[in-house]
Length: 209
Image 1 (cartoon, one colour):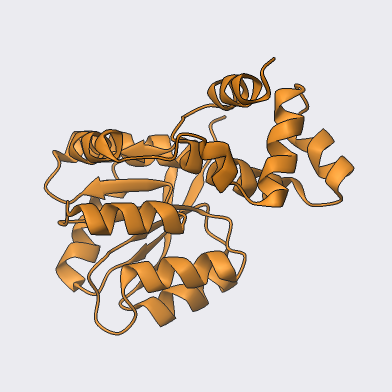
Image 2 (spheres, rainbow, N blue to C red):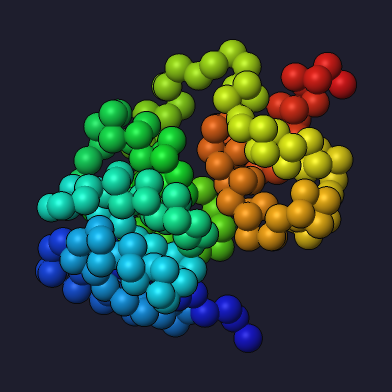
């Protein structure tokens, strides 16, 4: 039996929310558990409903998508958060990715592609529309990206490199497995890699192993 993913939509355009819901309802593993027309309402619903996935608009009245994302992460919301927007501006892309977005998708994408990307997001993958991926690849990064990690992210990476599971890391660092997952997602984003293996390779290269 396949897993069902609970999804929250945050977008200030009623027509867009309806369109997103109709698209998601084509996938039997998706269950839309709520809709919010602004960031504040979205944050409240996210804390109450604990969705697996949040689809978040960027340009909203009141709290912007960026501000909403930042508050969701500050409040410990561990859902996979995907930005769905018309903006492919570098400043928006970099700001949202750095703030903790797990996906950056464009609203003008083909419906079948968009649905596939949201499925990948639900499965825990970091997903970007092709145009967004290109912009991120062109971004200048630190020659030593590991230095951008927080102390806790570095501690998690060290244990990932040793082959430890999320459960083992959680027990050793006295944190929850969900918190470990959040640290790993942020770590992969900062290192600009898509897997634990790739992160381990960077770590070992940095350590000269």
